[in-house]
Image 1 (tube, rainbow, N blue to C red):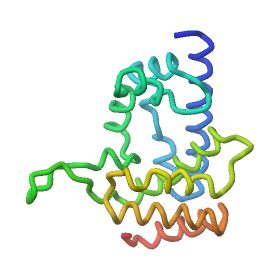
Image 2: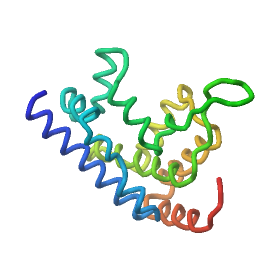
Image 3: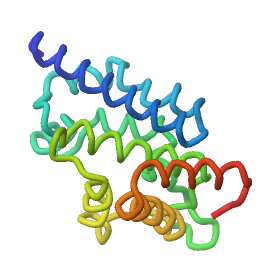
Image 4: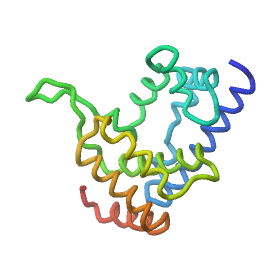
Length: 181
């Protein structure tokens, strides 16, 4: 692990975390923003992140290319409920490990996370369509509860079509209404 990689990774994850915090505050879930991605600073996630840091994509991708898996990602998704991969459990009827519907506050945090990640990794080429385009590229390969996927896509589409301000106003109002999705 190089010093340059460690500083670069620290800077990237901290900028990302602060951007997610800003979005979570705007969405009306400040506590989720405050807790967002703290596990990335743990040795299990930070050391590989620094070692495989590239600055243009997740270091987990590089770790996966080298070993066929990413221990940092497995650690991360198992501790952070804003990732749909966290929400898989054994179905008592089928006895299979299947996606379950995420609670709304974590879907909103996932939305904030995706928007922030697009902004951080795409920089000046970011548009409000970027997070939706990323979501749609992987949609057919994703194991996510259908209702969770529909809600996330709805929010990302709203962002692409109506912009950030209108989308965050909608999300905050939706959360306050205590509706399920």
